[in-house]
Length: 242
Ligand SMILES: [Zn+2]
Ligand SMILES: [Zn+2]
Image (tube, rainbow, N blue to C red):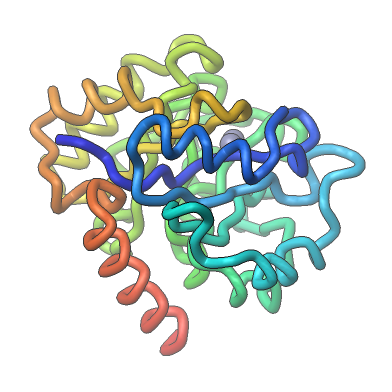
């Protein structure tokens, strides 16, 4: 299986990332992608991160740069056990793809029950499409509950390629998530979480975990441009009716 869309990338606007959007395009071309989602961090992660206007103004960017499709996204911070997020809903409606995840600067690692409650609540938010790096070992989670909830809501759980190097100890958790996702028919996404242009489209370890679990192209929302388009179309309709 070859992945056509990278659903998780950061540009210099994320402050601890090092490439411009045009450089990210170079990475996408190098790895022969059809497109990528720009998913800067939500404003609560770090001082100086983009104002919410940054996200509403993403509409000025062209939908395609040098043959690479550019999707507007965000990686929000889950702030509390009720699934509170760090960008008001009126900004989320401008975005093609909304990820939310747990980060230590915004959500202190808590008990398994509390961490699980936070993820379940985020999944219930009609604007959230995907949970980023749920395999992070810093946050013990009841994976069975989270996978079942994501499957019920038609949302995706990410197998994050950077987790295998940056979030040590993610391996077994990601394998568990992939195995359960296959079992319950839960959607997954495979993101590079690139913070440098050359990593856009780098999926080696994450994709191996996905393939080992027997997850097929249909359960991986970003395997093809068509799959991703179909996923976004359905989610857009669901957001509207919510
Ligand atoms: Zn993250
Ligand atoms: Zn990220």
